Amino acid sequence: MANTMTLIQSITVPSGGSASIDFTSIPSTYTDLLLKVSVRTSRAVTGSTLGVKFNGSSSGYTAKVLEGSGAAASSFSSTAYVFGGTVPGSSATSSTFGNLEIYIPNYAGSNYKSVSSDAVMENNATTSYNDLAASLWSNTAAITQVTLAEDTAATIVQFSTAYLYGIKNS
Image (cartoon, rainbow, N blue to C red; front, side, top):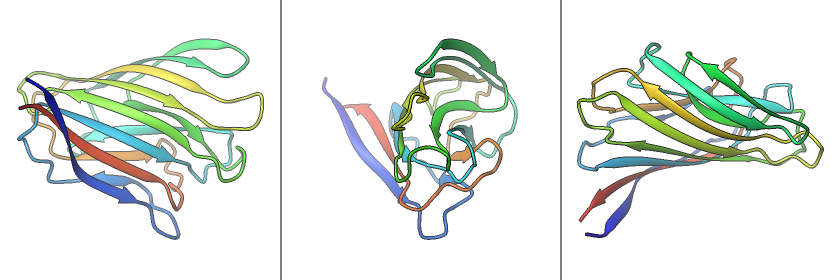
């Protein structure tokens, strides 16, 4: 069987920015979910962290992250959210956006939800981040809502975009 990918919803952040990007009422008719995101935040740093939460839940998250900064490689853990990636903040090269791909297999199943993330931050300078993350949401509920937000509540800026795709065998 061939895999099919169907756009469920796309969001473009309007003028003035947004505190988060929210996908709600996600149907359970697919096998997996895929998010493709192009984003920048207003946080006054070069690299800003984008976190992902499911169904409005603030607990049950673990993440292991491998990160390169242009000068060194490192690894770290997080328990606050699914780690989406490091994206440009307001101190990064102007008008550049970071790109993320977040894959959620078996999102409607009754097992814990594993998530993989791949992110690259654009910046015309030595410091620019690239992240690979493996995350787990220790919850058996089907994912019906996905929220992306900057980890210190900075604004996601205008023209940031997010596309949610459903993937299934057909």
